[in-house]
Image (cartoon, rainbow, N blue to C red; front, top):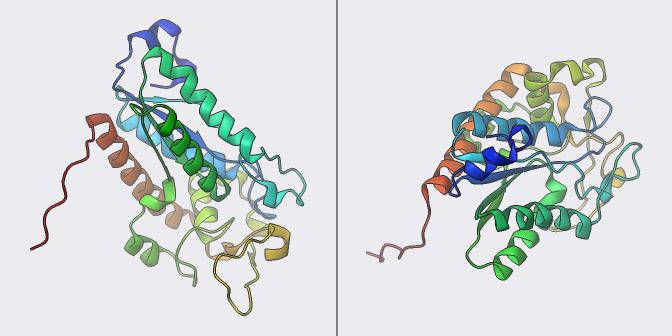
Length: 252
């Protein structure tokens, strides 16, 4: 079920065990070769796949597109929420639908800058509403590590920013939006490496991307997306079925 296409009476008749699925992304620079809406488009595509697979068990909201993107603001066109504003957007969706009886919520994210805020938002909501079932993850983390290593040719075997993986996904899903003639490899490294450093994106890159976009292909994107979609569907299916906490198996 797609919330934006439903009438209020259709929502009223929907199962309260349905999972409210919230795509989150950004409107931020993605180098010279990918559009600003990349993260939102990819998160929405993953949620579309989940809704198509579980149409009666999911209520998919419109994407929250204004992400926490302050680290990209030096690049033209980036529109960022504050951390507080982004968290309030998440909270507003949940607190609008909870009084209607919905109690299962899941955020499927496409933007790295939202990860910490999603964690904080869900923690705070759970503390305030203990009976709420709520979780979050990034669509890309549901691709098995062995698949990522097999698909990607470059030295970076995971998603970064406008990189081999994201360029490939966009070539598969939105090829008309990829500036193929402007694909480039980009990204600076901390020397010597120091764990946990925080950088603004204009310090980390020359033109805004981080990774090896010149290695991107639609074929790689198709496989990555199919694996991501499969993993996302399985996660939401489990939540829709119902989850409980149980005792771990004792050590042998």
